Each structure stands twice: as C-alpha cells, then as structure tokens.
Length: 380
Image (tube, rainbow, N blue to C red):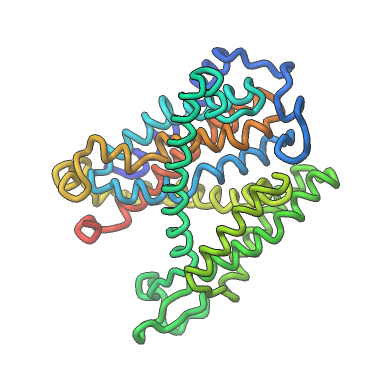
C-alpha cells in the first residue's frame, strides 16, 4: 500500500474529528467563555496563570508527547502496519482525545483540582487513596523508565556509516569507538537541551513581565530551537549517563517548585517547536515518498510473528502504542498543570483534543517511517 494514502486518510479523519466530534463534546460540557476558569478566578501567577492558547498548546503538547509516540509505534510495527494504524486512528479519535478533553474540562470545573482530588470528592477517602496510590506507583515506574531513556539519548553515538556520511565529513562532531567514527548525536541533543532550558526564563519574563506578543515569542522560540541545534552540531556536550540522571532529577525538583512561567511553561513552549518540526518532516517525507510510489516493506498484518516477539496482539499492541492512541498519563498533565493555565473554556478543544490529534499524527508518521524506511527483514 502507498504510504501517502495511509497518511492522508489519517489526516482527513483527524480533521473531521476535530471539526465535528470535538465540537459535540464541547456542547456536552456546555462550553461557555463567560464562565471564569481557575486560571483567572484563582490567579496567583505561580501555578494559576491564564495563558495564551498557542503557548499553552506547546506546553501541553510537549508534556504529553515524549518518547511514547515514537518508541511505541516503532516497536509495534512487528504486528504489521495496519493494526498500528487502525489503533492510532480509532484510539486517538474516540478514546485518547475524548479522555484528554473531558479530563481537562472536569479539572477546570473543579477549580483546577487533579483527578485524584476529584475522585476523593466523588468516591470518598478510600477511592482517593486507591487512585493516588496507583498514580504514584505508575509515575515512579514511568519516570524511572524515561529517566534512563533520556540519559541514553543524551549520550547516544551513531556510526557515520548508518547515517550515510563519509568519515571526513564536517557536519557533526565524531568520536572513535573501536576504531569506527561515531557521530555525537546525543551531544547535539545535550547542547540543545541546555540552551533551551537556559533561555526559558528569558522567554517567560518577556511574555509575562514585559507583555511581549505571541508574534514575537513564537519566532524567538523557533530561533532558540534552531540555534541550539546548530550550536550542538559544532559544540556537542558529552557527559556520563549517570551525571545526566542526577542533573535531570535536580531540574525536575527545581521546575516543580518555582512558578510555572519561569521554566516549565516557556521551556515546553520552546521545545514544542522541535516536535512540530519533527511532525512536519514526517508528514512531508510521507507525502514525498508516496508521490514516488513508495510502499510499506512491513506487511499489513504480521500477528503471528508479533505474538512470538511481543505477545498476543491483545493486549500488547494496545499497551505498546499508548501515547499516540490513549494514555492515562495525559490525565495527569491535563489535571495537574494545563487546567490551571486555560484562560477560556473555548481553548480546551484546541489544547486537549487538538493536542491528542497531533500526537496521534506523530505516532502514525513514525509508524510510516519505520514501516517503509527499513527493510522488514532487517527490522525483525
């Protein structure tokens, strides 16, 4: 099957879902911009901060779209590209986007409370204890896994041969590993991460203290993103993975304890443009490949081999592709931070439903890239 056909059908379905289904859900919640949101009614410029939708969308999207929508589809292609595509499309529209939007609405109506706090009011102390215990346990497992993955990615080395670059190239810095030149891809990411984080307070100060408009903040964020990558290619930072884990843990504690507009929100807003560029590149690549007649090397269905590698398609496909279809972690993001920053109820559809659709598109783009860009015999 032509890869562009799969991509275009998904985009059309996502557009129709946003145009009609999201509006239907908004009507069910009696969306009303005259009803003050917690960000306005309880504003403290620390956690409760009314935020422009383009900034909050970036903050929310960067919070939900981590490694999940990339790693999940990459692994799940073993079941065949069609099951992954079907789950990403159906799951995103009818489960993931609905969950994200309803959780954000529910948290807003409950003064920005988390889902655990809402559960306490509805289910009592026992329900609250069970909910918060499960959430804490899952967060420990999730953050532990992604802490390790992040440290590995920030220190990763890729042989130049795999990148189809000559040994004498000057595009990226290299190190020798066993006599083989390796590109310091992780070093580029490390430099970019440091620069984006360092500029986050500047962008936050400009937006919230100097009143800089979005028309200025967006180009500035894009400039920081591109500049950080270019500097990373010339000056990659190389640290031990254990050192990165310590730094990331310290950053998490710092970002969680200071006003959201200083680091957390502007850093996510800036970082989101890297994600947008990635989604755009995957989309453009899929269309260009389709125009050249590229088809999937992966089979449409490969359930037997997938079951032998990962386990039965039910439930392992749906566990593997969580972000990019449906992820309970999104409820923690929506109810934990995003609900305290929504300025108007009409923004909920854009941020929650739209954010989930974009993540679904990211997952589908990754699935297409893996399904047609790698010989399936090499993949398995």
